[in-house]
Image (cartoon, rainbow, N blue to C red; front, side, top):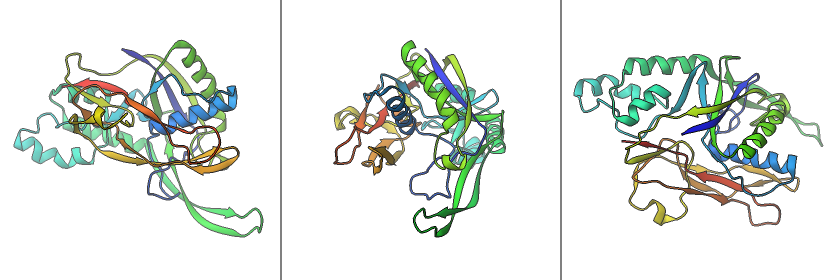
Length: 302
């Protein structure tokens, strides 16, 4: 099934917060819950609509030129039943977070992988995406006192690398997303926008095809996934990682801390199709609801 895609070519550093790390850290992925919140808040700002969005989306993953990356599946690496392959490439696989579309395709089908190519693909990613830490000065607006801090920013090679995500939605919603990202690219995305961070140029892609296995009996999520309830996930979480998610939102002109949410990470594997939910993480106060996206964006695997 083809999907809509949005590619972001960053023309300035972007600060992507990482849980448990201060301003000096910056991620190379924008998780699906953050993307959803950005889109939601922009829709409120532009159209005055504070309702759940009728879309499904992945997290935003890196790309370099025509190579698109996806999270490493939480499946046994193909060929690792052979001792010599496992001994030679175990460290490489363990240190790998992202794989290219073609390697992902072979991985979910259980087909043989060229692990030397996997290493080259990983090097290409690190050569074109860097995390830079710089000293910054914070100025108190009332007292004019200053304080030194260190801020991290992810730098994508201009015109070569960036982030992309996929959307499943109707034509009207896609038209709205194009309008939102046309404005958002000027305002910026992520932290430190007042310092010029997060600016990007947008490319819109239609008919983006994801690898899948038609007769597969496993499901891999490409978004953060929050189960509807315990019953939905009972006995079917085959291989996974968990991620604690929280964050800040602006509600009625004030910064408010969202309620914490536990989710399954991208690349997690399940024994049957799951749905997930969009959770209301608003603090116990008045104001418009704050939604944390937790719907699974699935591909089938063996």
